Length: 251
Image (cartoon, rainbow, N blue to C red; front, side, top):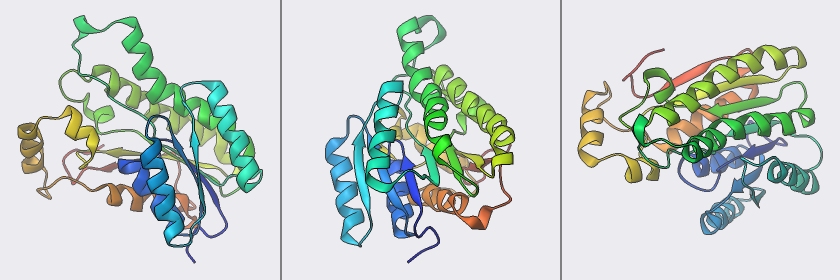
């Protein structure tokens, strides 16, 4: 059926945009997928319905992955549905929430951004790593913002994604002896609701115009790279942060 046949995958923020594309592509390659969502219940159902339409297996699990008790509940539901072995974990949940200058920042906003983008990555990995064995793959979603500091008002978002990038490298060293690979993706301008909400049209046009490939990326293109990193085809790849930005920025 596909290169991931028989594997179990957990995708946080898996109901829309890049997460949805990842969930569907993993399922098309044969993985059984846990589609995590928090606010997007209708979209989670749509994602599950699409996966089932081509014979895939998936469940939707509501969880706030910035809270340990919710992560633990998600793990329990994963084991109930698909058994006590997980092969693939994709930490996709995250958000910018608002653009704020330094003087506009407050402690509650700091906690929100750092918890959703970085804390979630740390503790989802902590909770699911014991279920993973040799050949397991963890894929974290960082950002081009981690490379260049991000656009105006995105300092905390960029910093939280920078933390994801560094944590990915650290965990590749810690988990490598167990045969678990840990990599991250650093997407640039991808055509998603994220940019519909937070990036002005004129900025998007300008960035696309500066990109060597002269366009925005697609969620499916990010998902294709996730499939590669989830599979045995990338069996000697770990500790890497992959730029996927049409050549706009290099590591």
